[in-house]
Length: 526
Image (cartoon, rainbow, N blue to C red; front, side):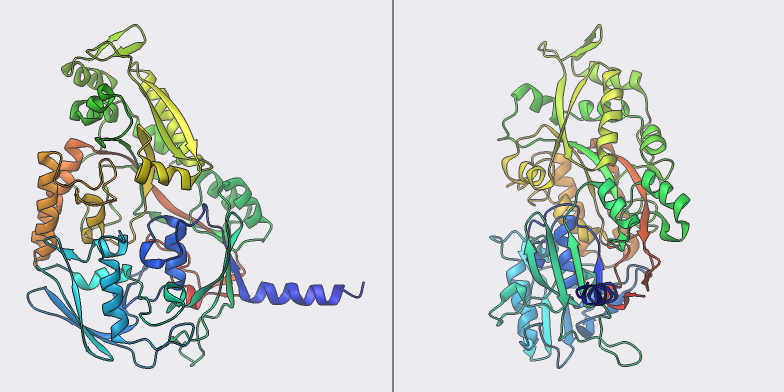
């Protein structure tokens, strides 16, 4: 019994200062400039300090480590004045040299940093020039529109700290990582921000991130008060929460996220040549798209809390969304006619190609994600109606990433994209054919198709154009090409649904990632 008072006191302290929410898969990296998937990006957001931040609620820019900045009239350079007296978590001073060094590191082609992809123009990386201890000039090889927005995705590393990328400028720092179990972040004692009363931020002492991909277990832990928030909640669980605890359920409306399907078009992939021919055919991709009932996906999988997708941006991105485009209409008869143009024919309940091969392929998706598992089942049923056999393979997330980025041992993939900003410049790493993140056929030395070459040219042109409406016209054309060619078969935009414990204060859910903890330094526990 003598342990009880100590235990209760420890629990009270634990509850007051430690925020807890799940990572849904193992982080691929703890280096913030290499973060590419959700778990790594979450850690990078919480620990990485950036020069300029896009406010997730207002979608406007706000100064962070940059005290001020000025973009040149020709959009080819920016001069940034950084805050004085800032230190990394280990006490190392933050200087303009760190900015230049981070940029040089992120744009090193050997590193393959997603953060560095956007800092290139005409194939050449931007270069940083230190103007003094508190000022740096960053010069691009060609004009880059809205270049100041790029810095939201560039966490600054120390060029001198012995801790290297572990030295943090963000509100938290990595304290421990147990693979398969959890990541624990501790309060950065040298964080530079203070609140209006002069109190140093963040308010929280720690963030504990258990690794748990099972959504039911995550929901049960939230219901028991073991975790404080669920950043993205499935519609079924959202409805259950809204019925049981309505004050904890938040629907921020249409999100900027999108779920989609694509086919592996990598030349060296271990796929039979006849299947590669299918996947490279626009008629085949268009036919598969026409055979999928998106309205059913939104009604059944998203329980009405989603809408059919037509491209990478949802209507929530009011300026850049191409409102002239409409989603592919469900029409199995039209799908079969497209396939007939490529020599496919249906015999009984089976579709055959012109060489007599039955049309059958597999789709991989991440295990434990019930949304995508259910989407896959509905797509399987839709394709069966036109004689196509779809085999569903669920993989743990690290294995899935390994297959789509390194081994290319897959035929098709059902996944999603989290848009962390509204500007198309932030998607250069997706659309440029030379990029490692060019999903269906990455790292091309030269564009494999004329339409990919056109997208390359359009993306470069919109990035260089200074006038916003001109950029809009150029990116509208990119969206038109994507709609016509369907290298990604866009399926649905889900609503931004989240769960927030009433004990957590200061949360203002937004549509942009990270929806619930974007203002992490001001969150506190009752």
